[in-house]
Length: 587
Image (cartoon, rainbow, N blue to C red):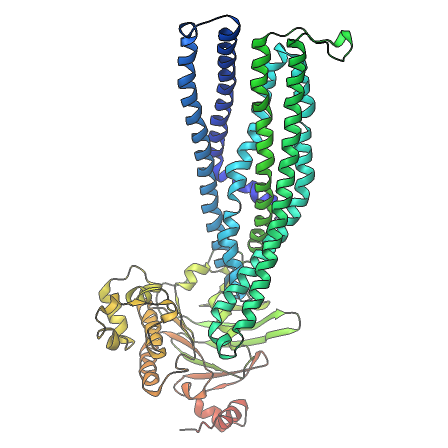
């Protein structure tokens, strides 16, 4: 997909409002011709025919509603164009956001969140001028000057010929200058994305920068990037002002030539052209009428030149959006398989292979089974592929080879949204969002009643501290759980899992970084959560896997050992060596 094809595809979203904007603008242009005729008639009658106020009163009264109607049409045309742009922006922002969701954390991990924020905000806003101004102006540029030409040519073909000759010069120079502006706009957007991404990264790591006394150095980097953006912006403005001056020059030259030709004939001064080409004599009314229409003939062309920079900006912004929309997503199955509605889920990895990049294999033929209702722990050294297994089960990644079977059905043939409704994910560092405690617990079940939220909190041992708060479940929580301890955040995340009532629970060392009291409460809640559900525990500490029904040892991208804790400790294998290294004794 190219930037221009993306912009063209979005036209259909606001087509109704864009067409209405053009119709209103065309009507305004036709009334403009009528307005010029009335003004020329009034001036001609008063100056040359000694008409009094009473003689031209009818025409003057006609001008008043004409001015009002034209003002209303101009406003209506502008408002409908902006309405079209607003609908397109809303639809496009939703499309980009949904695509980012489908691409998932696997793709997001390689992106800069600041750059994506710029794409979703300023990137989408950058296309507004294209739909709200450029497209209507481009259509009206073809219609209004044509209507004026059809009026001028029969009454003064010489003025019409001047218009025909000079009018193409304006869009010609607009295109020539616009090619340079497009390159500068693309450079400007890249600089803006770099600045936004870097600034957000610095803000997120401000604490670390302060601790290492590096904040002043980063401030200098931001100042340098900001200055680069200022320079690129000024380059764009310089070319924009230059192009506007060129367009105004040619429009002014065209109007001046028409005025000179009309003036020569009104004063009966011979024109420096052959006799056979000499135009007929012209009256003051005709000459004044044509002169009133001449600036309006060039006005749409000049406006198009002004709005052409909006098109260039939109193309540059669309380039960034296309880069996001081209992110690979897993195809949806034509006929998705439906899982049985109840009971624990069984999972089978059959020779699953996955690589993040060439030469970086995360899984190299991993094969294992998780029986329905079984509690399985997955252990192994860092980089063994434990997190990759979880990401594959969550649908964030797709295997390069092999298959993942869920109750006998290939995971690739399941509807991913329906599949995730059967899952609960409890990471090592859960994320809470701005809102209330109740809203955070309802994250996976937004319509759950308060009673269900209370029961889930009680099962997760979160009600113990929530009930002591003055506002209880309506207590506001800052972003990332500001105001709560690590153990409290972990129990809120556990309450989410209880409320969701998932059939398969994935845990990533849920008791890490907790004090002994909080760890004991969380462990009790995990034991309760495992009842009647399939559970996969990704363990980084062997002390948390002793109660597992089975332990899978992952190393080098495949399973090298499996069994319960006691069995594996009797074998001289990787698990026993890890246990001794971490000073974990068998019970």
